[in-house]
Image (cartoon, rainbow, N blue to C red; front, side):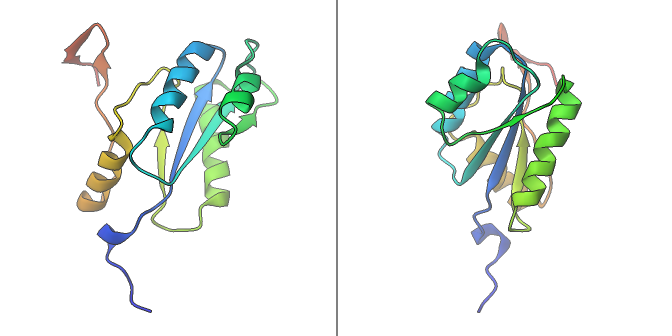
Amino acid sequence: MAVRPMHDIHPSVFVVIPVFNRIAFTKECLNCLRIQSYGPLCLIVVDGGSTDGTSEYIRQHFPDVVILQGEEELWWGGAMQLGIEYCLQRSRNENDMLLMMNNDTLIERNYVETLVRVSQKQKAAVGGLIIDSRDPSRILD
C-alpha cells in the first residue's frame, strides 16, 4: 500500500471547549462548528459544573457532541486537560489535530479547513487571531 503525502491526509480534528454556564455563548459556538466546511470534527464540551442547564441543552440539541463532566470546578486548565486526555485516548491517526476553543468564540465557516491546510503546509501548530469584537481591526492576541 502506498503512503499518501501529508497534504492528502484528512485528519480528524478534535475540538475541546471548556464551559461553565454561559449557555447562550456555548450555543452560538457550537452552531459555528456545526456548519464548518471541514470534517471530520469531534466536538468535546467539558462542563466544569454548570448550573444553567448547559449539559442538558447540548444533549438535546447537539447529540453528536461529547460531554465530559468534571467532578468539581475544573477552571479552564483542568477542563482542557480532561478534554485533551479524552482526545489522546481516541485519536487513531498520528495526523489528527486538536483545536482548543473558548465557548464565546465565533468562527467563519472555513476556519477549521484553513487551520488544517496551513498546519499541514507549514508542518506546524497554528492558531487564529483574537480580535476585539467591538473593533475588528484591533488585534488583541
